[in-house]
Length: 308
Image (tube, rainbow, N blue to C red; front, side, top):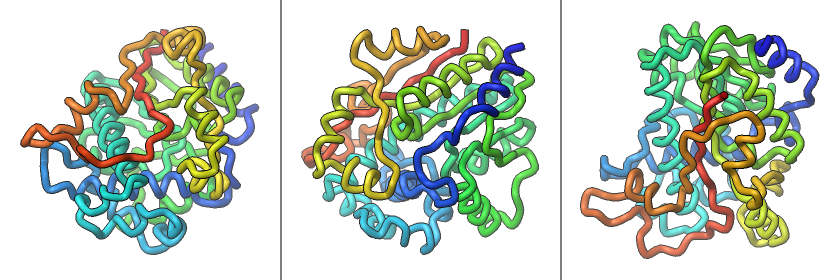
């Protein structure tokens, strides 16, 4: 019954996204560009593991984000790119987010999760970077037609064919067992009502399924939306992909997710000392971007959640 409810809830739902569904997501391109820059870090201790991010970006994709400084950073030494505060905030978030999700995806694959669903897949490269690990796992990339067309075009250009275990769809699939969901960089682009609907839908997956996602706090998001100089307004909103949803600070994220049907496995603020120690500390014990100011007005938190 949980699977039927999952399908019905999504089939009756509007689009998952707030931008024109026939246009590729510029936010997805920016996120990939940040991973591409960070993947060139000369220090293996802090290098972003997404070695496919740069190949997934052709000149066509980069032209769509010409107004953002991360566009010019893709071909620069990352130590130079990080001097721009807009870039540094993105690069640090990309490092934390990529490695946090990668670690949990690999554990899920080893633990026998039968399906992986990537909500708002954008230019996520995990089905391709972890091709051997996931070759017997069904992977569903959920996205809008415009972003999906861009994605498949790049996959074909790089690999010559679409992988047989990956399905590209606009709706969540019928689930047959424990499922690992990824919702990276997407929740903040939904209205609160829509974000809650998506989370409730995911919470109907088979018991023991997991969701790894990121989110922001409502108060910080509201401040950024009122500030025309914030990156969220200068870039995302200008592209038609505004940040709309933040988790209410009261009663707090743990209570918010529990009320929707999840158990908390971990909540990790991306700007926390724990995140810096795990993911941003160089071989010489300095931290990525140390001593450089960032324009990071809306702190992001990573969450690993278990379906009850």
